Length: 465
Image 1 (cartoon, rainbow, N blue to C red):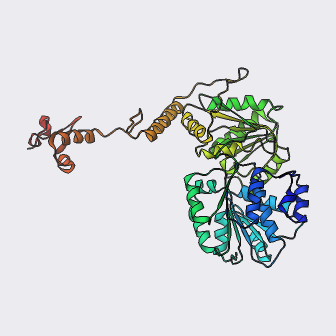
Image 2 (cartoon, rainbow, N blue to C red):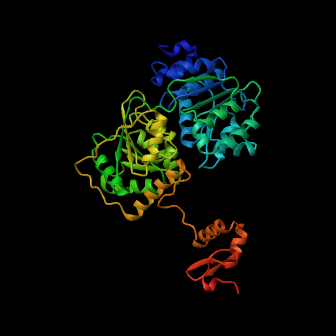
Image 3 (cartoon, rainbow, N blue to C red):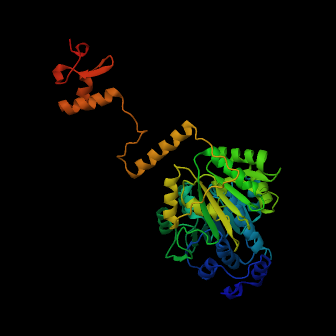
């Protein structure tokens, strides 16, 4: 389809689409929108940056048409506040020539303003599951008029443990004549299970193979020995500000994110050109940081995975995985922050010896080998790995091998108490139960033995009197 006219949308929506700069529908929009407009339940599998938000928002706006009553008629659930805000912004842009009312509901801030907005009357709710249930249990949300329910980023909801809350929501909202839409970047077994519970005779739309990465993203891996060398490489890369114009650095923990932020702010990036966002940052701080990054005021955004699916910003030049994600599907979502809207992007991943296991799992999911890149020769200092860090990585490798082979005994396997080992040996020799063996077992200085009566050997101090 060459343009949006073919969907028979009303003129208000078509004008808003034109203002937003959309020229022609993306594959997910082209395939999903006619089904949603026709009232079908839809299961949409599409990677981030493919336009899936508009694929369900436009049909919902077309069906609602105008403000009516006080109770919401559509509910869109998303896993993070950032994604909720992003969807709400999309609704604002696409509904600009209508009087349709909508509100974003999420935690991290007090609910007073959100409740006041709902009480004035609302047509579309965009919410995290937790905040929705909180306001519903306070009897601030009426659900009798809900006709459309959307679960966006369903795979992330499963990873974040929202299954129980989603089931509760499905219990309290009316099911009669309700249209259900489920969108996900990946389709693991848990999402498939949810789709069976949630969707009724759905039509599956899959515009790309599951968990594939964006075609306009050039991926590479740097193999590094330790944390300090990773920090040094960040410094070398970010010094080339002409190439690394707009960068997101992803980390596993708040502590690592803060350390990278302090290092860049102190030594590498111009003052005010780097920000950090994670769960400990206040909502307003996170919003302001995101806006500054979007507007080009900030060159580097350091973030934990809390933000990997809530950043819809064009022309991100690079994504750097300082830490390899442990939820492997998150790799797809992290690097999906670059290479958007037909722009080229680059995704760089740092890999230590203990990360190789996780990289192999990711490569299996995305069905491709990520190229290894030679380390920069100029300016990079390779640090010696501290003994504790080396030991931690080797212990992690042991744990990984145990996952694959439960019988594997590595260098860091749990060592048994000498008395327990002796009891096991005695049991084999005597054939007695562990209780009897234990009763016959007595301390004997450095050694432990069995009394002669039990058939085992003993030192003179271990004999029964």
